[in-house]
Image (tube, rainbow, N blue to C red; front, top):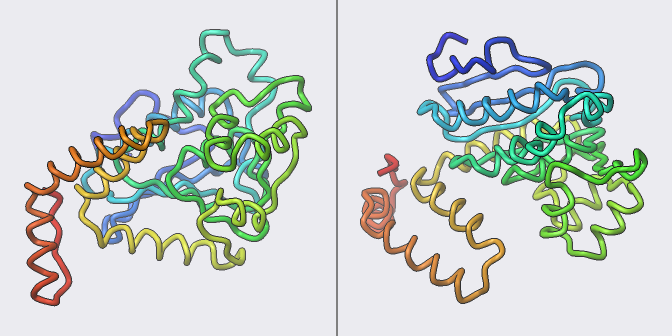
Length: 267
């Protein structure tokens, strides 16, 4: 990719994935593409972080999508890589996989088939998960004498609670797409052939909103995730006050009274 935003040394030769940008739909995709299971290598984790950061800085992109080629999203990480990597490198695994969470822009994970290990963990770091009916989520590290190492157990517990997370992590249990939807892990459950269509619809919906309001909402929700209700309300009040001065809010109010669709500019 010749765009200077993608001149990061880590992105010179992509390992197991590609980046696609559709300026017309304001969409940037990170596509896992290592057939047949889309195994994620150790170097690939660093590259994925750099890819998310580049897309987050790209003004052509409003929404980032993480998806995969083939039948499965990802069967997880390259197992031997854990033994080959240094302890220092392994200690940063969660930082790399948290890249979608750190993005200011909305990030969608389009899941299907096996979504195991780090594939599940990076999906949990995204803002929205759309699950095809074929999806099977799992954190199977107990079978290797290990535990999830990229934030999976912590993020999952925040979503589904302690008892269910113990059931999933300590038994290396697989969760169907239906159960993930019922538990609130996935925001949509769709037929396999409708996964791309549903993802595109969500991208288009998110692009209808003010980019400034979206960035603010995401940061507020992330920052207040572990806050008390009182602290969360305080943070919300400060964020609301800042948006009150924005051009987008003025446009939104004006459009509401004029009964028309607002034109947001992100200021």
